[in-house]
Image (cartoon, rainbow, N blue to C red; front, side, top):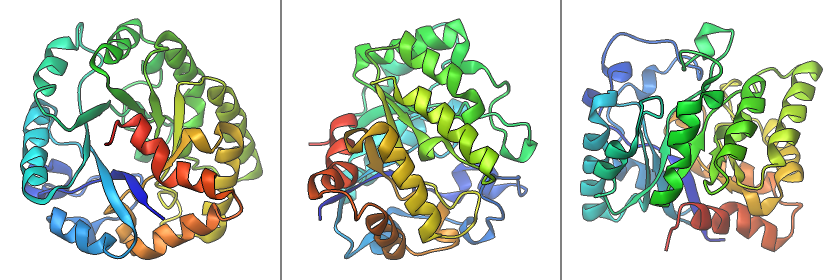
Length: 294
């Protein structure tokens, strides 16, 4: 099967304060093994023999004033190695007008989307955004809507408690494709938590311009759990349909507890009950469509 990895990172430790400075709490737990350079050559070795033929890089939290430098570095890598094939960069959607930043980023030919992490949680270890309701902010909605004029997707990162706002954002920006990170980051695995996630996801899935990324499923477990991955895959595909789901490795984060081939195989098995066409959409076609990969 031909596969597109719709969510991976490469990095130089010196560019990332959270990797090079003091240890900072992260939602994926202790991360000493990845406090180092993760070059594209290592990523290519990790995915060798898996059938992954293209990949989309998602911004890795460089200092916000170096968003262009991050993409410029990636373009250099791509010119040398052919990877990545698409880039999701950072831009601040809370400024009065994001267009000057987008105009500067558009000089990079592999730019395909923007991510600004909006996720907020009562648990400060899981919190990234300064407030929980950025999706409902009028300035944010206006700036995100402008992505349509640039042909860019928006990688949407929220918890289930924020999904009502995310649905409003998607409605306010009908020409923008939203890619929900890690299928909504289910973190409460109790019956009540699963029910709340499912209810919020059901509402969000009613917005036809929202896609779900099947990635990062080990974030809160700190392991590659076949039963958990199968459950999340089944639930998400039932809500969004295979044509609005796409797979991502989230490497090297998931490398903290598994290897690439094992991770992909577990995800393939989780989707194994679907038709060949549906599996092709999840592992290849949807990512190519959303991120405009040739």
